[in-house]
Image (cartoon, rainbow, N blue to C red; front, side):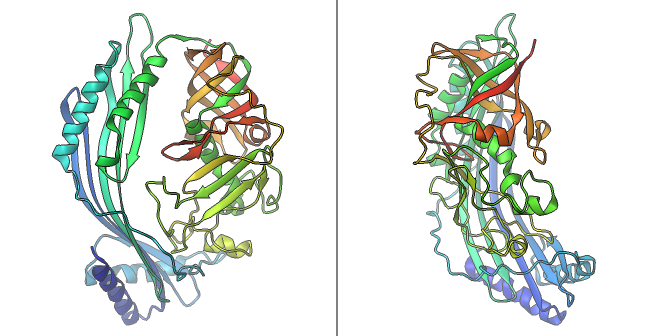
Length: 453
């Protein structure tokens, strides 16, 4: 769908809204072409190619209540039917909290769409994935299978428009490869690990790097030992720390605070919630963010937002309605709905320039003392109580002594998230790019580790 057809879509909605005496409306539409493959020992396991289109439409009635509906029928008949349904649903809209258009929905923004490339196609994806699986299986005799794998490409377009003349459009594409290997040795438990890579197109994905990383991680867990239950100095990998931050993002989510499901309150802004050496940003437009979008579900421009500065909570993520309650501006983190959700885009953890209390001898590659290096956190949905601030999570990682890494057989890490942020004793200077953001290795003074025994 090109921009001319998108303009026609908005014109059809405006025309039919007028016929139905609907004066206030907005919509978000998504169009995508998706291709994906999975293999099992060189044989195609699953091949998919699909075209999707979905439109979410909101209508306000005379009492300013909102009704919402979704449709995939973008014909004039389908749009008129959706308008009528949303109009009828508005009678049941929330009377206690109003939703309006974002005041920034018509702000001029600049966005360069990525260069156009044709899809690689199912046949090419299948050939590449078969070769990747074959190469991974030859990396070590203990690697017996790659039970979880996939290679995909998605080409998509998004639009937002409303009855006040706001109109936004962008297109993007994303390719993804994941390889998760399983190693088996006699009289030992199977060990698994993997790698995940993203790019705008298949050509941008470093296939060999993904294969090597999956192999190296899996092999590193072959010689494992149990760990004694106790308190340990802990170093989180960039991916693991970002996972934990995301799990507790309700701390800086205005919607969660209003709903009473956050460890923060309306008075938390300005509070010291972490180490003076911690900076946290959300930057959905970062050049390394493959899934970057120039605007959110309400048409608000995406921006770089400082959330924590030198340990102090400085900003919250807002939609239009939460920003109005807090007497501020929306931040570009909203979805589209009658009760709008709010979520982070691309988190960046940084070391504050002014910190003097960190111990720079703490480096995951050179430190010779005892510590636990957590590579990956698991069972996030089951082990995190975000409204209470507590977590108890199984993890993959190593016990490190005198620079030697010993894989941990099975263990969980537990603690209080607010206390964890304040007990950061070092944030390493080198940042790493992950699929969910950017962060360095982060050290915590002590956390409870529970071994399997």
